Every structure is written in C-alpha cells, then in structure tokens.
Length: 225
Image (tube, rainbow, N blue to C red; front, side, top):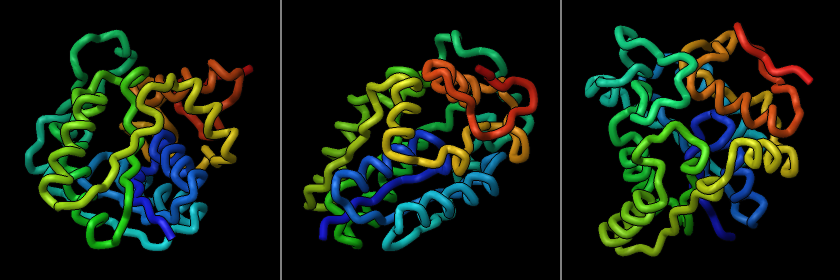
C-alpha cells in the first residue's frame, strides 16, 4: 500500500489535488491546519467532509495559531482589510500569509516521515493564483530538496494543479467527481461567500470558464448561466 499525505485546507484546489492523489493509487493521510484564520470553522468543516469522501486512513488537524501571533496578514488580523476586486494588483495582496506554505510543508514532512508516506500533495496554483511567492514551482522544488536532506527520506512533493488555470481546475474536479459544494474559498465569511475577495473571484472565474454555476452561495456575486 502506498500512502500520500495530502494537505487539505478545505478549499477547492486542495480538494482536487487530494482527489488526484487518490486517482493515482495512493491511500490518503489527510492533514489540516488551524491558524486562527477568519474562516477557520468553515474550513475545518469542509476538511472533514473532504477527508471522509476520500476514505482517509488518518486525519491530522494541527494547531498553528502561532501564525496569527506573527501576524502581518488580513486572514488572521481583522484590523487589516481583505482586499476586494483587486485581482489585477501586481504585488502579493494583504491576504498573503508569510511563508505559510513553507510552514505547512515543513510540518507535513515530519508527519509524512512518521506515517511512511511516499508523497505530499498540496494544492498550489501558480499560473492562475494571487501571486503568492510560496506558490511557485521553484519554491516547491527547493522545499522538497531541503525536506529530503533534513529527513534522509525520498518524499516527493507534488502540486498537480500548479500550472493549471482555475477553469482547468474546475473541469478536473468534475471529471474526478469532486463535490465542490463541500469546499470553501472565501477569505472573509463563513456563511455566504463574499464574492469579492481574490479567492472568491478566482473560484468564480473557474466556474465561468466552464459555463457552470458554483454550488456554494455568495453574498454579492454569483455567476449564472
């Protein structure tokens, strides 16, 4: 039995990446991080649903609330406003959490080593994302090299969505039978998605490119056929 550790935020991208791992013959060890983000409760709820749908062998929920102590981002600091309708900005937005994926991958590596996982899957998106520096192919390759040097293992970091557009990601989700109603992307709200933050706009873009309606509800924007 080969096993993959899948970092699952509760969002669309990580859900699709984990389902790709399943389709490639891996048994899934599911990993989620709580870091006092605004939508932490909703993301955890979605993680549980996604992990159950994957028949995960084990589930880990790791408290990384120190990320909120570090601060400097709009996801954990409510004094910093979530940027709205700002996808074209060239600089990483205020929703960038400093080195978040580096922190997550480091912790994931330790768990993967103990659990005997051959691979770590993460839903990084570089081609059609928000421009976060820790979502690049170069970053992932460097982290993978460091992780294997630090463990003496040969764990493969896999980001199967990294070069895909949001439209391609939505299409892949439907092909794999991923229930996107059980995923959450909004940075701000836990009841109705705001429809205006980067994550909502990118998600809606993916559905629009496929002429599909998003199954979750939005407060202000909802694409319709």
